[in-house]
Image (tube, rainbow over all chains, first blue to last red; front, top):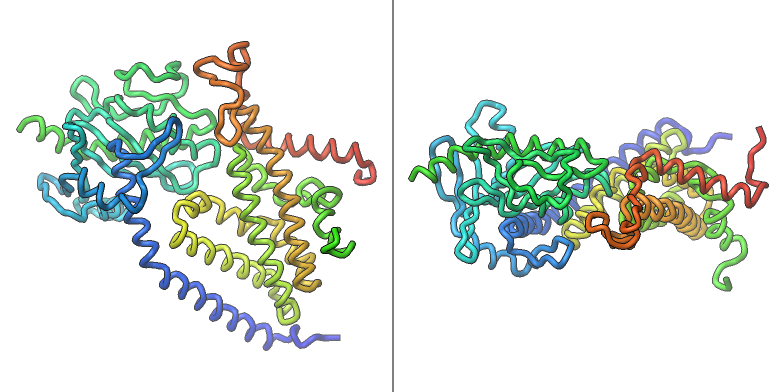
Length: 248
Length: 215
């Protein structure tokens, strides 16, 4: 007995119809929701930048952003300047926070000069320089917003990831990891060293701030190495700007 | 259960015990070891699978008479992938925080063999209501094991449950750590998930020897 659904013609027609229906449905959903999703991503960037400079709603142990409703207002209140560094040129751009770091990395690889966004924030009389950076973890992209003072000492950090292992690498966005970076210097006796996520640091409370090291997360070696590599290669590009800052 | 007939109730109850998708059918092992390092992730994954399998089973069941048998696996794959992507997009637009927690699981849900397994074994041959119950039953059975495994892994590996330090602080040496207890970091690594699942299988089969296969 052969059913009508076994014929080749039926199979092909079904396949074509299915592709059109499902493709159309997905395209419609994606384009209908695009503006809302873009807006959410924009607010998230503002929340991330504010988080790094210490404008957040943290409770005792977990990382909490300022609410999305407040974010735009707080962003314009605390972020005094948004800079774009391109070689020796430094210009202001009020939409610098929308620069896609991933695209800039790709264009730098293609031989173009990379645009480096840097946000200058003022809070309680202190000046923060916040850099958005991006690198690779174990499974997928990792990124961070690092707030520094003029001597490149970390004042705050926010890490995030696309698909690191839950319970292991994903813990880079936990307070106990991010807070360890506060007070660590990226420089060591005048030279750029970065900060290494180190195993066997034997400094679990992270009281030694002069060693360019923070304690690693057990079971997340490759994610940790990714964080070290990202900090080193990305923040190094900001060194000329900070040297200029000191000389002027 | 007055609401369901005996046969329908069995669709929910069987996968929870004697026909569990993980411990008896040994499906969904990949996600069982990938996301059971902490309890919260396991709960999120269980709820996601409950949702996708419940709805997916109904969709496949409604389409069962028009799906060409030659390409049925591809059709099933497209249905589950489309479903997951649409849900992901909707969450990104309306519940952004939640979508960020879930984004890690999207790939794991699409490739979860329990989902394809239930489409193929049940939804293609049964009506939508029974398929829905089957989907709910199997994802509950899956979730129960996930949560048990994650409970032990997070407790013994990190000394926490849902992020709360239930055993005290390992750095400040409070709670049980004051007596020299140490977390077993090995519990956080993937192989230990298999060992925990193995122990569950062992306990289950020694309690009900009818489940032991003859070879």
